[in-house]
Image (cartoon, rainbow, N blue to C red; front, side, top):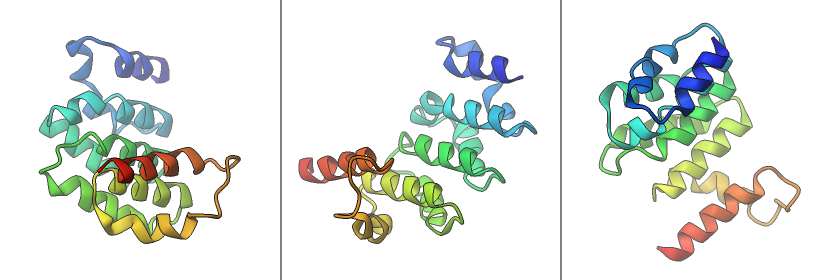
Length: 145
């Protein structure tokens, strides 16, 4: 299923998008993660099934799936409060990477609920940290507002 999920997630064919929301419930976490990432375009277009599938994956049992879902929610419509609420809920996730990703996505959506987490990292994250470049994206976003 992993190669199929990867192919569907990366296909530039609208027919490939139909099975993706259902595949986000697959037993294999790597399949779920891949298909969640493939829903970006549908989430951006406010497809209700895609948005619901990604929102549900913010509560997945696997941290990598939750993190992928947080990344995709950046593309959700700005006037929909559900993505920001789901991201805010992820700020208390047991995994640091999920909390950080949620805080970054909230900041990029101009929602201040994750600012305390990001501000705590300011000045202590250097170029060797996996958090450095996402934090730079947030800083640039804030400067350009």
